[in-house]
Length: 170
View 1 (tube, rainbow, N blue to C red):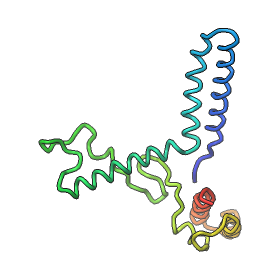
View 2 (cartoon, rainbow, N blue to C red; view 1 turned 30 degrees about the vertical axis):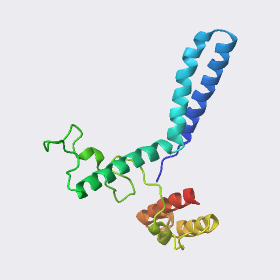
View 3 (cartoon, helix red, strand yellow; view 1 turned 60 degrees about the horizontal axis):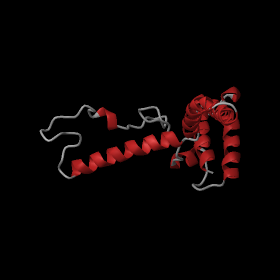
View 4 (tube, one colour; view 1 turned 45 degrees about the vertical axis):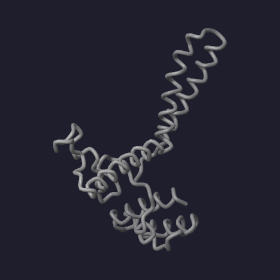
């Protein structure tokens, strides 16, 4: 299950407000306060980028593009990641590898948030079901499989993960 991002959003807000306050102070009192406002604004922007999920997607897309390029060069007869004499660069092979684990996470810890066909099967839904149908199916499955009611904890966890991915997509 994906961790709650409310802490990141809170930090984004705090740093953003501090940036605005110091920016106003730099206009009203002293331009020296601008030297504090700019770093606060930069940190707020980075927190926003991370909290909105864009940072993770950008990293994942960059690594996927690198892996695709490596595969294409291998297909063309060139060995991926080697120099003109055949030796490997400083990066080594492991840097570009992205192997998915059973839990929907990649080896570097970035979650795979895209809905999968098995998510619909877990909730007994047809692919492309509406958000309300997903919510209702989740509630029924949760009642049925909740560990406090004698259900299987692992199956309940799969239902929760499937619902989280489908909920974000709806």
